[in-house]
Length: 168
Image (cartoon, rainbow, N blue to C red; front, top):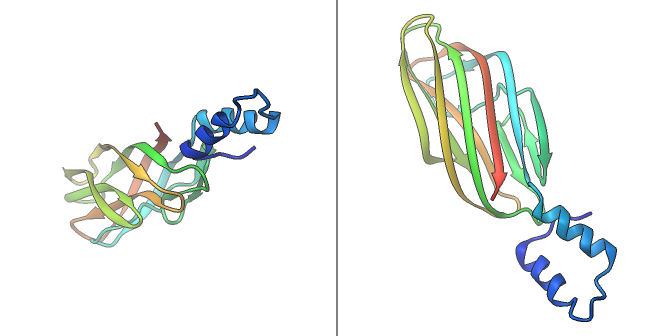
């Protein structure tokens, strides 16, 4: 089965005026309209922050990934062939700060920061959650990820984090 773009699906259905669509094309239609996306997550992972924006590299696992390829070390998904479209993204990061300062997260598109961000000021040893939501268009081969920054270099413990990407 192949995930197809909207225009490919419409063309396949338009060609079916004589009701001769084959089973493979019908399976492609079903596969393409079902959920395309994925979730990366982690529990109790340290991440060394540099005091500058960097990929959220603490992810260790993924579930329900379809039409996307995940890169844990880069903290992003790459949109697969035929899976382009409008996507919704959501992230929640719960962490423990080693010292006072500010920690920020942002959604990235092709490595560039987007306006979808959150930041909080922490006291030493304080647990807080950062949350980000957003949406936008992604083409085949685009990446969508999560980045993290801090006001000072430090190793932060990520108590848990989830990053969900879903095509609408």
